[in-house]
Length: 461
Image (tube, rainbow, N blue to C red):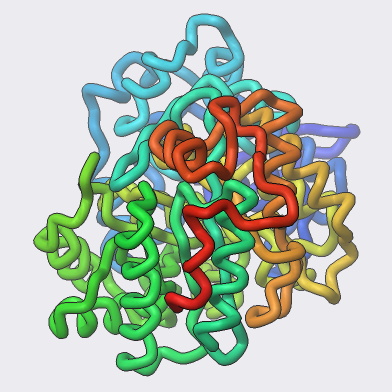
């Protein structure tokens, strides 16, 4: 179907829905690289005006990637809930935006429609929203997930403690782990990106983290961010696997480039559930995503990178994960050129994921060759905190020495909790007080010495 709109005295024509979505997207370098971006601001506005008038029902009739060619498209259509869609089925994209911003769109009503939304509907409405619109709607939504801690409650902010080391050295990991715990970090997950996918090395890291969690009775979960196939192998060997991790994308071809399929994820999800390691809940998956991943694999089918990203959330939603993390600036300036583009993308990803019912976190980050700096990350950190992000990263000094990129530090979480009056997850907050690390309000009690409760942590490792 051809779409058309007038702007600046010119009539613009858009050959199909994926072209319209791409042209309506706020400027980013990845879409320019792919050759799908609007030629100028006037064409972008024309596409946004046309998109605002498009009925939501059209997204069920016209797919951006053909149903017969792509298992993610099949998942999106086959899992669509007509009953949940019914209350908004009469709306256009513009109507939907206005309703989302209204007082009628309460947290309960937004939760009720989540399964009736397709990723493309959500991506479309994000394209015609300002940053403050994305924040306003996001903060309404509460998506709660549980394993050994409860994440996503209003007024709470969790962190992933990320003690990476370039050689997986246990002493180096232990130092970062202890540092993070003393700053009140780690309630979302203690997660290591391993330097190698060697099964024995990975299992050693899994055992290390499990020993610490069990010895000190920490109400959190561990994850070694290795490939899902390595997780399956580790489970078969009897390793202590809490969460199964995998990077995912929004097309079958992009997921194939990661070495995965929905069938493999189904198998891993079932295997993790069978271990029954969760004490409070059974959300056992951890997914990471990022705008530009499909394009970097030449698997985007001409779809803009923001729409591809939101399609990945349909994959995540299938498995009711504990954590979904958009690693927003990690892929590089070829896809998000500068701080402005990274900030916008982070707000979009958080909004779209939560609207689809996902427990969204964000790795607020950039690579060293991007036109961005830590002030940009402070801005995005604060905006996402206001928007109700479930969790952020806690990296020693904000500088990951294994992955070589810039993220957020342990003290960044303290800043955000302080200025927004947020606390760690409830179970973790109790543990911090019990261990003498923080008081009941989350204020740190540790100065220059270890509390007695943790004095044997480093020798133990």
